[in-house]
Length: 464
Image 1 (spheres, helix red, strand yellow):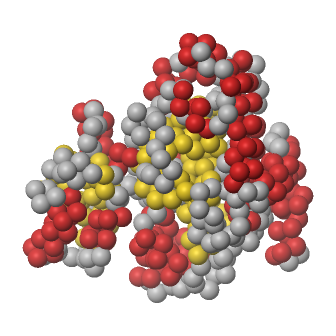
Image 2 (image 1 turned 30 degrees about the horizontal axis):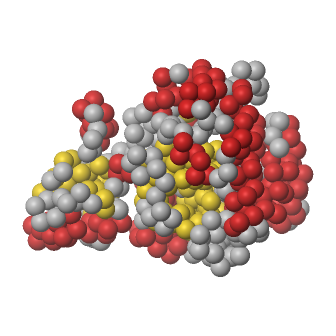
Image 3 (image 1 turned 135 degrees about the vertical axis):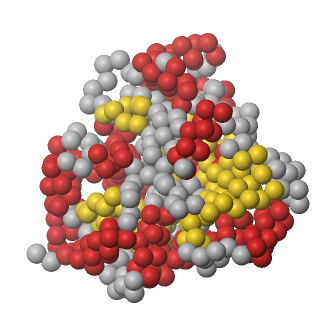
């Protein structure tokens, strides 16, 4: 059976059957999403508002936390006329779940799976997901894959570093992965020998697409170039990256090495599948199931087109609701149409964690994109992390292939001071390695401003 015929078998029969046996409504949801994406913005907004109202009515009647909250606030879900009405409710943080975990669980909910975040901030969250939530997230990912001409059953390689995924690799999953032509590679401990093995695997499997953290795949790409092994002829059609901020230099490197486009994605185990980049470059929000608000520090909506914290309400989480959930990430919502013709709104200027933006001496928040090139452009720098230790101190830890001259240090310091203020102190420390965090992520820019002493000590210990 040829490659395309086998993909058709998986996408048309085997994967839908797999989802049905698991109690998921994924295939029907995909069909709905592939129709709704072509609606105009006004029609999608009306559809989302109707779903939001009915979602709030359900959880207000069945989930203890929201039953109490709505009563205390005098909040009537039936009165909701738009996303703006959510501002009448408080923001939801991980600490709220931890304080009263049982209050968020719908009594009598069945088919739930226990899940958790990776804890990259030192604050892992344990929560539950039901079949409707899983169906929605898988359907949104499936739709986004098809934007790029990829379908279930096309050969894929997944390079991932989270211990959650690594520990889930059992015999049953291995059988499923073989059936669906999916190859899992661990991003933990990528030694030169392991990287050689990964290059062998890529050349053997010739994946149609790759799914990875950007930083992990960049390590593979760099090793391929260093060892003279070409990956551009594999036939890979797209590289999907998520879970970290995607830097411009990473996109350039991956597209050069793999000879294909890079598609950025944004979401999480807790917040869901929030947005995905289409071939025209638009980061489309999954508005059919995810409500995105951009808010200021008080939790109030900012004007459209302004930057603020991304807050998410997932409309398929009746069993364990996420309402106005704080992601700690920063972004901008835009209504401008995308050249692809889809009516889904766009999420732009996605800067990653709000507490991982640098802060200048005058209090401005500075995206990491504005400073990372000052360090990564040095040929002697193999890897690095930029850490703002205090309002007036930035420390850069460096893994080097050679010495960093005094002139190079001064040039880096001058560039950072030019963006953060002339009084900013800049220190460069050479280290043997920079480990990934427990979540498998690699954060190039880290801010310790506002961290508790205990959490700061924990992050410093991880770096050592």
